[in-house]
Length: 215
Image (cartoon, rainbow, N blue to C red; front, side, top):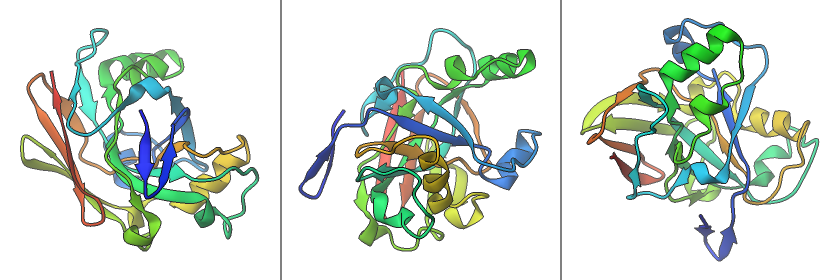
């Protein structure tokens, strides 16, 4: 999948995802507030452009939506300071971190990694990207998620435990960030189950609306 933004084209190869980044979502999952960002990754085959179908995974029985703000990294860097972090953002969008909740719960019980519950093909639908100049204040980004036109999540980046610039700083302490890298920044409360035939829509004033159908 290619991402086109203004006159630039990006090819995402790495998708960094953040778990437990909204306190009310942490509470609804009966978990504890983390002291540092919870990081996991997805492969590029997880991406699904807006308007395309998402196939219900065959390896589980409880598919959940998690709407998130997605950050597109525009240049290379490591050990990025909080003051520099915003300069590495090329654009932002909205997406879904699709999760097989039954698989995840089983993995958590056994103390195993989350990959099979989070990093399967088509688990990261993502919308079109808007430039940072259009999005404005990174700590005041509102977004919503609808399932079959029913509002399920109403989030705002102001409620993040770790704001976007902190996420960039934390990731760059471990990895050399590269143009085209994506960061899924965590989901607010209101996550829930999807069934075949459902339509999921994410929208925000800075982005417009993006929709996927589960088949």
